[in-house]
Length: 431
Image (cartoon, rainbow, N blue to C red; front, side, top):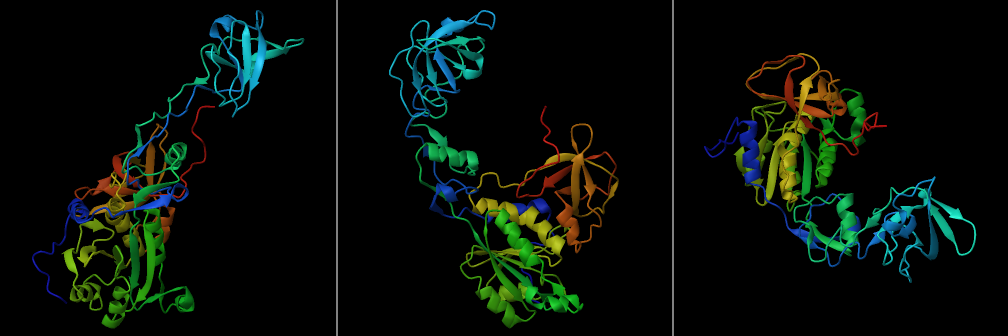
């Protein structure tokens, strides 16, 4: 095994490991994409509005443009009767001014005519027979209301979206409103995912798994999915066998990628040679173990311009270390300003035992605690090979190094796990 130099840190705390990773990680360049393809990307330019939006005072309701002075005090018992002098659909402009005792029928979004300072919604009116057309206003609650003022949304010349903003549906809508067909966004990192080990089998050799001769390669699929949810472009590199020739061939396939993620082969076993082969190829190893469970045999370094993360081979260990140590780095590469994972305070729904000396990240399911907060319950056995425990989890419960037990009801920190579309059984809104 290659000799470790003093520059290669070992047995780091989780915080120190993450700090070293982020210090070595930098945003990638920018590229221009159509706004229809920009959702989830990080904005790489300030966006200014070339116009006021809305460009004119417009109606917020289908109804009648009126003067507030003419409808105040109106009620069903004492309606205000007004003459309708015009109809203005959305997309048209009024031709007349609203005078005393007059109203103009108006649709949502249509420009408000001069003289009007209110829009009475249609359900607060009744038509009155006869010529000329008249309406009776039955409620004065809309006096002075239901007009969207010019530039109340966006003002010409102002920055409406800042560099570093993650583009969600609302931001895409703003881009369309200011006439941007395309926008500059941070380039998505291309990330190679490589499984290693003679014991692994892909889907094409699943009969060997069924017969008990090999183990299914779940890591490359799970990590590729994790990369995609983190905004990266996963490049699955397959399975490398436990020999130098196979490893070298697979590492050469990663040339030009921004990141290489390997799993397994980085512990201290006789056949764990991944790190040695990488160092012979020029890997500058930064550190190679972290005080984390699951996942302590985690390494980080650089091979040329490619960042290399060595993850443990156990499936849960690989995913946990990705969430804690890799995902923040991918956010930084994508020019995110919020690189650290969101945390929340929860209560233990049951007594939880731990072993001091390592920070434990336990798979938990969150549920209402009956007091307006959330309680965390273990998803079952916490072994690093129990992938089903990860599939059942919606958060990682953080148990610090010095803690050996969380009592039922005791507060702790949890990291929510990403979800394609997080929801719950009930809406939680007032009826």
